[in-house]
Length: 70
Length: 283
Image (tube, rainbow over all chains, first blue to last red):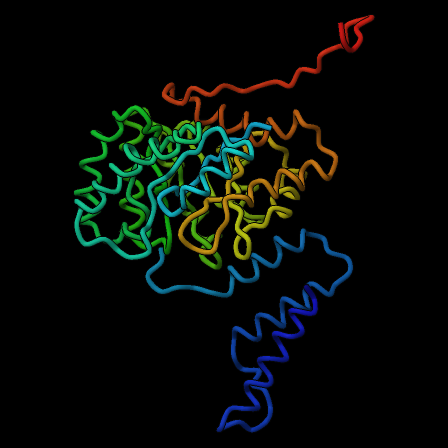
């Protein structure tokens, strides 16, 4: 499970490096990527005061807003 | 062990799935009306779909001794088209008379647009007026939290009996608010996305099995009717008794769906027989 997350992040970095207009450095400005790193950081805290699954789902809920919703 | 699969999209499955489900303990399924993967252009397409799930699927399931029930309604993904949705809603009462139709569903919200909210309210109102059970879909992924809150907000303003309403697809961040409001909750299990069998058991252990329904949806997407069985296996593996498993996977659906008298499967109790004294093998 953890290996899959590591491999996904590596795959992203490799894809950025392979891109013709690449500067060779993975962008940190993609908000989706930023969200993933925030999630990983959140899971690395040892003393969770709230269930981690709940925290993770709330993190992803709070950071995406669709137009047209009420 | 006898199992009831309370949310199952039979039209997306093969006959072989029905056969294997029957062989592994499934005695009944309930099929909610849902999205076909594309938006239908004509109200008549919905009508034929309702005929399929209320007339043909019960026959196919019966080949293997499975009882098939269904729900009718306009799913939230197609509720944005007010004209079509309202034409379909006007035809729902005739289907609610069908011998295997047990309620209005799955209705609810997808992106929580103003039109979706209107159509949802109109279908809740229809269920109330026709004294029907209600099955409510909540959105997936990043839309779930907002959409579930919005569903609860709408229901608060309407005279619904929470005991007769099942709010489906809850996850860790939405289960508490739905249970606290007195509604039934549903976990929908998938092999990859949404809720896994293990997470469902985690939530049952945290919040109890009362007013809880577990299902595997088994639709046309990446899904598997046997994620329900995986969940039963995980539940038993953690030491829960056979009777507790029966309460969750058979008796709870029987209790909720049985509020409609057309659903005639009753809760069961496991009885261990005492060995007769002096009884031996052979004559």
